[in-house]
Length: 310
Image (cartoon, rainbow, N blue to C red; front, side, top):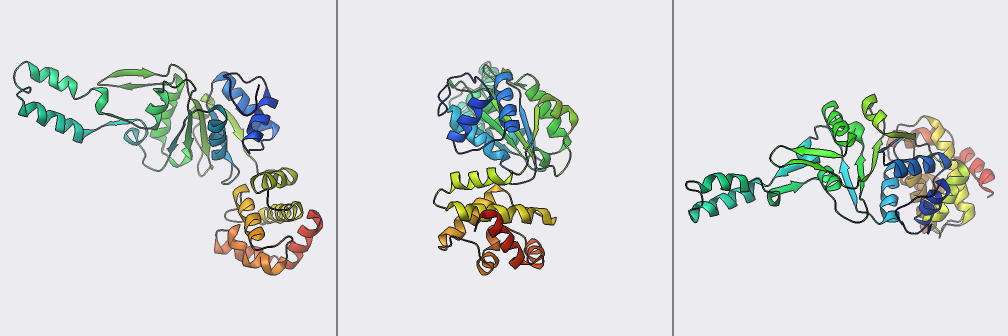
C-alpha cells in the first residue's frame, strides 16, 4: 500500500505507522495499533490523555491520509442536539410559508401539503454528526468529537445511541443511517470521567507524552530548520520540566514552538538567559513559570546540554 495515499484497505500496523509518518505524525506502536483496529473494525477510537499530547492531531492526520473530509464537533458544557446533529432553518421555513400565503397556496387542501414541505430536507441544517452520517463521498469522512469530557451526561447518552449503529432519527423525516460509517475519533483531556458505556462502545487508547527520542524526532520532522543539537536540548529540558507537577505541563506542540522560537532568535544551543526570556513559548501560566524558575534554571540548562549533547 502506498503510505501517502489510501486505497480503502489497511494491511497492517506498520502500514499505519508509515502513512502517519508520511503525513508528519510519529505514532508509537500502541497508538498505531489502535488506529489500525479502529479503521479495520470501523469502531470509534477513544483517545484520552493530557492536553497537548497529539490526540486531536490524530484525526487531522487521518483525514489528510485517507483523503476524507474532516468533520469536527467541538464539545462544551451545555451542547445539545441542535448544535451537534441538526436544526431546522426557521427563517427559510417562514419565508417559504409567506411566499405560499402570497400566492394562495396556503388555503384549503394545499395547506396540508405546505406543512409537509416545511420539513423537507432543503430546510434542514446539518450539524457535524448528521453531516458525517449522511455523507455520500467515495471516501468516508473522519468525524472528530473533540474534548467529549466537556459535555454533560445527557449528551454522552445521545452519542452512545448515535454511534451504536451509526444512525440518527429525525422525527419529521425518519431515520438516517450511514451507508459507509465514518472513521470516528473521540478525545478527552480527562477533566472528568466519561461514562463506561460510551468507552465500551469504542476502542480505547491512553496517549502518553512521547519519550525523549521520539520527541526529538517529532521536532525535527515538524521543524526541520531546527538543528539536531538544539532539538535534543529542548526535548531534554521539556522532559525535565514535565516532572515538576505543573498546572499545565507542556505538550508536544509547545516543545515544537519553543524550538522554533529559539531558532528564530538565532540560537543553536540553550543558554540560561535565552531560556528565561522564552519560557512563555512553552509554559502558558505564570505560576508554572515561577515554579520552573525556582527549580534553578542554570542546573536545568546544564543537564539539558549534557543529555542533548551540547
